[in-house]
Image 1 (cartoon, rainbow, N blue to C red):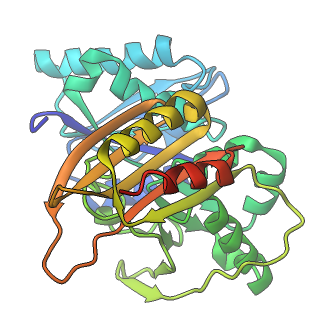
Image 2: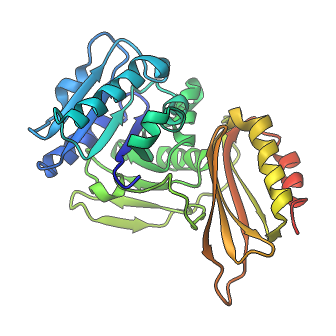
Length: 338
């Protein structure tokens, strides 16, 4: 995996600012060796022509379709062709950015990097970055379920066009985002200005010990320096019903066999509706944290660092999903306690 190419999946609804973000990166990293896989829903890929790529930037355009709908066909073929050209020395790139059409559901795209054996060995999915149009996100969530799916899969959320919103619109957008995904870090950016290290090389799909829940967001100014700004997300009465929500399950020491059976049943019964899930579990009799991470029915487990002296071991599982029997799952999780 040390030689695998890092892949960033850039998603977000139509007009959220994905191409603008890439162009800012390319403008300020002229020496970057990168391949960009562009997808547009129409017959002509306009976004690809807008990219300011230099000699080290390789752009591949997929048009007249959505990669999430043809993931076994054109998308997989394009990835394999990129890798073959890289192996033959015809192309040189150290990272790959996949910019999906604004209508794409990230689920099948993400699974491709884990299911296809050749891709799994050569590519390392780094993170799912979702751009959100602050001005239009409420309407998009009301009318397009895929907008909620894009938020639910996000490892990091970049809020754009907040300068066009009043305080009420801004607060409503933040509340809805947090309701769907309170695990992803949230940054507010303007005109694509965002330091590269805030959306590249995040290692979100590597199993790690951290499993915190986001409680605020950061504002990025034109100086490229993040200005932290705490924003409490208050529960308010809503006139909407977002199907995708984040659910947190907490406990103390867990029984390994019971916890394993619980996860197996969750994945088997509800995997199709579990978009992303991450957990740091305290296993009775084991000094190390048990790390769990999954996308739908693709799940991985590994042991992380040991609990430190004076630290209270805590099991926390975050599931971002839709139409889940939350109370039944909460009761079943509680039964795994040692």
